[in-house]
Image (cartoon, rainbow, N blue to C red):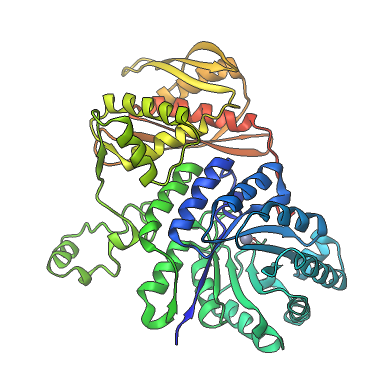
Length: 512
Ligand code: KIV
Ligand code: ZN
């Protein structure tokens, strides 16, 4: 008999905690819809008490998604839990996920609470959460560095109060597969009512072992839920990568013998969407979703693949959603064909005027680029969505000149709170020149932490997608811009990052 492994995706909550990865409500809804197509069992849509923006995003996702359980994180207090319950009201299936730290270090230094106080608060939280739903998850934060005896007391008590999932958190990525798996096994063996809950693993990748630890938690510890994110997105070194867990369990079914509900053909589209929205590029050699994951360069490998594919390939690229770049639309495509392609890609624009605006941009792009791929459409819509009504800055045009031996110069025209401004500056390169030009008017004082360019598709006609990460007063944001001209893409990315810095939305970090 095979068991089901529950896939709990936390891209929109723990993934979003990654500095610079914050997403707008509309972006979160687009990702949630893709997660639903991927058929994840549980979507952790956010942390409702963190900010009004998080609350609204969870509420919208709860009202939109039908097939996955929608979950909100909450600290172990009544206010957070009530807020989570309110945000989840419209969900067909809802889960409240409450947590409190249980390690001596966190209890003493962070919470300044005694173990008995922590135990009492955990019990109260689960009891209160059960007033709103019978699907309640409890996480002992920093669980892998907690004392087994104390964990046993807390977990037994919260299961008694009605926790239905127990999530053994390796919050700081300290775990080692064998030890982490065995600790989970010990807990399940020692806690008398452990069989009344589903056990879950939640691992961070600080030592590069998040996937290995999660799988050890499943195989040694008996966990039947894995918490993970698309592309392993997450704070510091990230979380367990969903695509790696899913493809490991599926490819090595002979060993894991577990059932999954996931539609694996939706993995690569999910990976591209998350990367495009957050500006976190996927490394080329990343397992499953990296551009090189199925590329065979050496002659011996290519020869083997041609003779029999399975000589060097353990998964098929098409099974995880890699498809040869398909030309989907061109210069002569009409509005209806464009609209239909948007629908096929799962993009629902709110109004006809938004479709018209996106179609105008599509036509402009098709004038400059003969073949338009799905990736181009996704980038175009992302640009359109980033340009929300509340944005302060909008790109208008750019003139730029570089010549060997000359200092590059850029003239950027953009609108600032509705007023068009034009500015010009030199720089030691074209990107430096556009940033200097914009800053000559904006004086943001932000520091550029990261600049990256990726080709969206293949070929020299491809659009370049630029990510710029800015930091100011402790806040970090990513701006993304796409254009066939990478200097224009850079200007768009810089303005998009400035818009994010302008949006004052502050949120709590759940671990604080
Ligand atoms: O890493 C962690 O401990 C968490 C908890 C809130 C589950 O993300
Ligand atoms: Zn976490």
